[in-house]
Image 1 (cartoon, rainbow, N blue to C red):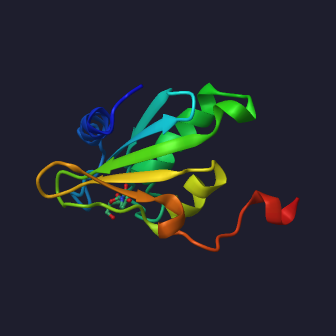
Image 2: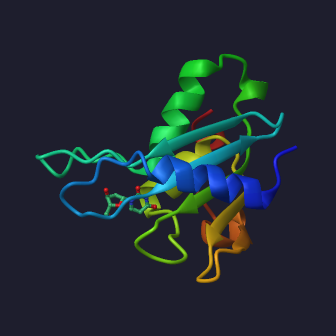
Image 3: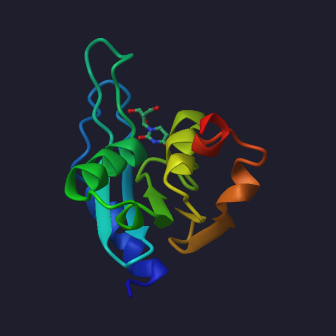
Length: 134
Ligand code: THU
């Protein structure tokens, strides 16, 4: 199983692929599924600004494209890295999309390059989810 440090490294590599000519704020994500599979993503900006997709949601769309069974779509941990800032926490939109796929833990990089780990429910408590419209 990939370690947290390895996951941060994969997120760092993903950030190097970012398309962020407007903000110049590159972000990378590495998503470890409950079965150990890893997907990664980077932010992709757009001249219209509002069409920007964050690194976390980009990684999730890749994960969905590569899987079909619900049990393959259970996120254990997402690691997020930005070379431009320390502790790059996921935005509110990404939290909601991570929530859809059961995300359990979030890791961000601290100023020393080490993982800061929090439980997802501490970032988004009392959240809305698919079970509420079932
Ligand atoms: N961004 C992400 O990709 N993930 C985050 O968690 C925070 C923000 C991106 C969106 C935009 O391209 C840039 O960072 C500046 O907001």
